[in-house]
Each structure stands twice: as structure tokens, then as C-alpha cells.
Image (cartoon, rainbow, N blue to C red):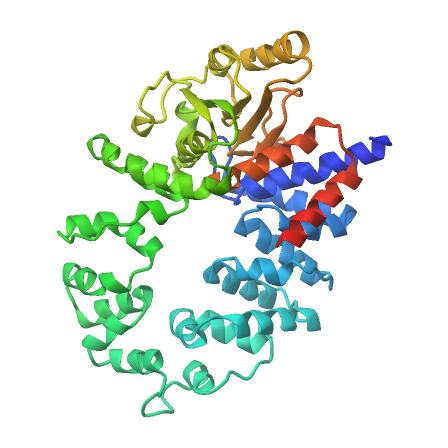
Length: 454
């Protein structure tokens, strides 16, 4: 570090990055939704006001969609620009993007750059007619806000759908016919067809069976329980799902059904590890399944799902692997949120025998006894391993609204926020910047390198 100001800048940006990766402004185990949103809004205002170029550049990191939308909104509102805006919008879910466009319209953000962003995103969509049917009101608002003239039949469909006796575009015509033909609704996206099915009085089981071939992977996973209750054999492909989503689904199942999905979780982890598979040497992990890993009613078992997903990904990345749960659990898929958090004891277990890497996945509330993990890590780093032979990192899936950061276990161990297990390798790299050995020049170079790789 060159100056104290450099240290503050680096710490501020890393603080924001951890918050933007983990927090979605929703209720957590120890914080209400209001506290989360207030804390997150302050961080966005602070970083945008003090480091506007770095603020926009954080889109190159693995920030979640909620915070990516906030960054884009603030940059466009300030009449700023960012080369990563279009890139990030293309990788966000369409509902999230349309919601962002609605917020820009509500706040009166309608400068030339904003209109160009909306236009370019819409023109890059693979099937605008499909969007017009699935997100009709949101797309109509975006088109109006950007002063666009939709091509072909889309203008009539959005603003005067009854002007035409029929549409040439199949999905638009199916929407028109579905108002009076039951068969036509099965040619529509699930969320649209569901409304028409209710209007026509079609039994739920009949509708689910007929619409099943048109479901997306996410819809198939979300409706797996409903399909099972209706007697429909339609298994979701867990191996193709994001790891945390697949882990959340497995944890929602009765204990007797969980083990049959272990192979799918390992396949998803192998896919996420990619060319890094088996390259991390010996790895030990301490994984938190204490009571606070329940999360909240709106993020049910999310911290536990992150820990389970990280377990299988670390198993795939490692040459040899040991996963230690704070409860002493032997079978990972049987995990449930329960009991205190004896992180210190598990860290001691994980360090013997000495691994190449130690990864701790926890919300950082070490309470059995309080502070033991910090003391173990202090003695380990200063007395037993001052050269840093064992690379230790703490990954925290929960944003602490009161502290404006993810809770740390020890100042001697880097901490990074985590939301999606697939981001784990990049987050381990990012956490290295938090140890104070690099300055803003290195951090800027890292962000530029990530941006160039996009």
C-alpha cells in the first residue's frame, strides 16, 4: 500500500463487492428486509459518490442481479456510461431487466444513453414476439419509455391487440386464439398459459400434464412437487441446474429421498469446476449447518444450500478433500439447520492433518464458545504457519446490515461474500485483495482484466 487513502479505497470497494455479491435486500436470519435495503442503499450511494469509475466496474465481478440492476440504474441516472452495462443486462433474467426498465421509467430517467440501452437490449432479444406475450405490460412500458416503434405486428399486439383479426406470428396468434380455444393455450409460455387455464376452468392436474413439454428447466424444478402430487412423472434435470438451486431443491425433499440426487449434485459440481477439476491439491472445508443456516422465511435454507453446494464443488476442485460440518454430520445431503456454531473446534479438526487450502463457509457467528475460531486462526497464522503455507479463506453467504459487510471471523483471514457456488474460485481470488498486500492499482487492474475477459 502506498498511502492510507489507498488502503481506504481498496477496503471500501471490497466492502461493497462483498455486499453486492451476497445481499438481495431481503430478510435474513438476523436482519429485517428494511434493514437490509437501507444498509445496501447507503453503500451504493457511498461508493458511487466517491469512486464512480470503480462503482461501474464492479459489474465485472459476480455481483448478484439485484445489485447489478441498482448499479446500472444509478449509473444511467447520473448520465454516466459503462462498457459493461449491455454485457451485464444480456446475462440478467428478462423479468429482472424489465423491472429495471420500469424503475427507470418511474424515476424519470430518460436520457439518450438510457433509451439506447433499452433499444439495444430489446433488439438483441432472441424472440421479441415471445417476450411480447410473456412480459406484455412490461415490454409495452419499456417501448413507450424509449420512444421505440416495434417492428412488424408487435406494435399492434402491444397497443391494439384487437385491431387484427389474426396474427401471422405463431405465438401472437396462439395468444389471440387462447381467449376462446382451450387447445391454443398449450402453445404459450407456462406463466401465460396458467392464466388462460384458470379462465377456461381446466383442472390443474390436466393442465400441468399437457404443459409439461413447454416448461423451462427452472419452471420444471419449481413445479416438481406439484407434478409429483398430480401423479406426473416429469423429473427436473438437477445436473444442469445452478449448484445452489439444485442444493436448495434437494434440501427441500424428505430425508428418505435426498440420497438419490447425490450423483446429480456431483455432476453439477463437476460441470461448474470445469478445467479446474482436481487441481486444488488437498482441501479441507468447514461448513456451517447451525440453526442460523435456516436463513429466513423468504430465503429458506439459503445459507445451508450454499454450504452444501460449496461442499460438492470443493470436492470436485480438490485432489483430496475433507468436508467437516459444524454439527459433526457425516452425510452432507442429510444436513438441516440446527444447533450452535462451534466453528473453532471444526477449524482445529480441519487443520490436522495440514491441508493445502482451508475454506470456511459460514455466516461468521462463532458462538460455541464465542470467539474460538478467531483465536485458533490467530495462533495458527502468527505462530504455527506465519509463512501462509495453508491458504485459508472464509466465504460468507449472509450480509450483515448493521456492519455494512459480511461478518468476518478474523482480521488475519480474508473474507468474501458468496451467493452462487459457481463463483467460488473467483471469490477465493478476490478475497486475496482483502489482506492488505495490494493497492488500488492492482485492484483496478484486476477489475479491468475481468472486464476484458467478458
